[in-house]
Structure formats: structure tokens, C-alpha cells
Image (tube, rainbow, N blue to C red; front, side):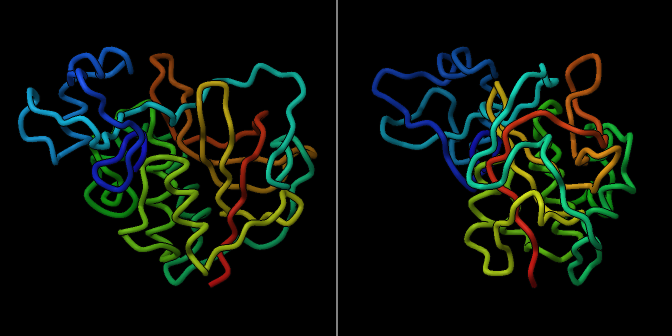
Length: 236
């Protein structure tokens, strides 16, 4: 899980002379968070050059849109472009969009404590300001569109898992259906949400967003103003 995962991907290679406390300070996190994100480390004073390290909250981020022109990448377009219409995508367990919508206005920190459904599939140790991929992954799991092993707590990690899954294909924003996974490039890194249809001529997106005054995330639905890296649509 790249930036905030346990063991599913890595995003920092330990260099000679590095210390866990030094790495934590440089990346705005704590030694405790690094230990939780890297369960292979048993002693905070023993890390080895050349090994890969997960950095909690390093790239998964979401900042309020500042306006201005945005351009899409990978043929997906801009999050302000013309969105598609049509029925929501469904998996064996239902629609990930409907599942996400049932949790609107819940704080990610509270949702992770639930014992059933989406909350049970979210990793509860993930920092409360970087739960976007954690939430989307859990919705996809609940819908039966991905397996537990495909859950990823980083945007690029989830994006890669969906690219490798033959049940998903990349589509344009004009082809999007509610529940499609939308990965965006933000000023601070990346963000992932699900397409939620059109409203007042603008595409809407649902996900775990940094809308609380303390910077933590809550499940909300709104338009967004970021370049889209990819849109994955379930075809299974």
C-alpha cells in the first residue's frame, strides 16, 4: 500500500545512515506510525540500507481546489469535464457507489471502527487524513469487485492493482458510470474517489475527503477541480 500501507507496496528505499526517527521527521510522520506501516520492522533502532519502507500519508492527499485551468492525463480528462451517464456499475455484492452513498457524512475515523461492512474492510490504523484509497478499496471489496488482497491504501497502489485486474478497464470521463474509480493528481500528491454522476452540468465524485476543520476526512460527494490520471470501470 505505497504511502500508507502495511505490506502491499513500498515507496522509500532506506539509505546508509538513515534512522527511523530521521525518516519520520523528514516525512511529517512518527516512528510509531512507521512501525505500524512496516510490521516487518521489529526494532526501531534496526533498519537496513536498501530495504523498502512504507511512509504513512506520504502521497495520498487532498486539498481544496484552488480553481484555475486543469488538464487531464492519460486520456481521462479533467475532473471538471463532461461526465458520462448511465446505471451504476455493479459487482456480485452490489454497487460500490450505492455502498459509498450509504456512508455519506460519516467521518473516516468513526467508519473504520465499525465491525461490519465497509468499516470492517478498512484498515483502522491508517491516518484519518489519508483514507481515500482505504475507503474506495473497502467499497469495491463490499461490492465484490476486488478481493481482499487487492485492497490498497495508496492511490497509485490501488490504481496499479486495477490496471492488473482483467475485470477492470480504463475509460474516459465521458464513458464513466457511477462507481467507477477515479484517480486524480492533486497539488500534494494523489486522491482517489468514485464517479457519482452529473449535477448542474458538472461531474460529481464521492469519497473520503479532507473537509473537516482539523484536516481529517469525511465521506462527501461534490465536484472537484483536479486533473484525472485514470478512471477504472468494472467489466466483470
